[in-house]
Amino acid sequence: MTLKERYDAAKEVYKAIGVDTDVAMKALKEIPISMHCWQGDDVTGFDGAGALSGGIQTTGNYPGRARNPEELMADMDKTLSLIPGKHRINLHASYAIFEEGEWVDRDQLEPKHFKKWVEFAKEKGIGIDFNPTLFSHANAENATLSSEDPKIRSFWIDHVKACIKISEYFATEQGNPCTMNIWIPDGFKDIPADRTSPRARLKDSLDQILSMEYDKTKVLVAVESKVFGIGMESCTIGSHEFYMNYASKNDILCLLDSGHYHPTEVVSDKISSMLLFFDKVALHVTRPVRWDSDHVVLFDDETKEIAKEIIRGGSDRVLLALDFFDASINRISAWVVGMRNMQKALLNALLLPNEKLAQLQNSRSFTELMMLQEELKLYPIGDVWNYFCELNGVPAKEDWFKEVATYEKEVLLNRK
Image (tube, rainbow, N blue to C red; front, side, top):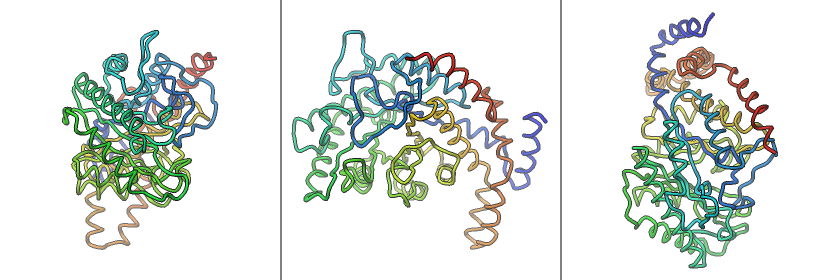
């Protein structure tokens, strides 16, 4: 049977439960995912930052890491050619591209240092999101926006302000908003004597940053919490409670990272609550294994639950990005697996008879609800997914891996 024939059979199966697969595929194509650049080079960047810091680790030494902007862009282009639909790329400020002989510190970054990224994005027809880089820097060894040292704080305030201007530049050039997400690694390894003062300093720093003039329709500022990090196990200054309240009071986005909570705490359960009080919510989807270990996103239960809440809450209200970095496997394969799995999870949610399921819950028909939810797990989503890939001109099933293997042999293994 051809992919089309298998799809036609699956279409009838879903039609019997009131689901239109054509509508589902059309909706999926319109949901962009922001693909993080830092998977391609192990979060190294191009500004000479050196070793990772801020509780971040990348493990593994698989050959073929991108070493410069040209290689990273080539790898990202190859990756995006294997993923159906049009998506976005997510950059960190440490990926500034300087002309030969030029270098400025992070507090002096300008839009011109990201001009080549804009050219790349325009050529590929994709959008750009952005992140200030408040780690892997001499001024980030102890604390950043919550630092006791006014000079350190001032440096990072200026950096984030510069990033807002760069984000506004991206938005203007691409004709749609740029999500700019602030994450800091500040915290304490052992039990602190004073939690209030550093959080008050963080609040003041954010207030100073947001006092600058910028177009709020172009730059969607977000703040990202974390429960702990390496070297800051006992207290993270930018906690979920801090940022959720700060975002609500200051009309900015609260970003939820699925690896930044306690091991039994899930982001899928938070989305519906957030959307009752925020117009939009931002997400970083990753796969924590016991802690914030940023493994490649799988087509697993929590990813499916996150996708269900995105679809049920309104996909236009959720700014979706991925965040993982694995240097133990082919980096392009990691990107493709993660991106395609996020799309599969979204398709799974779009193929559910969500109104029927909600009616069963509202009538407290929990026996039938459980039965139907379980039976739906074996419905032919794969046949719909494979046809979706074919319609969008990318390899279906595992056929994409042949291209990755060829690219590894011809390109990646030649990087010495």
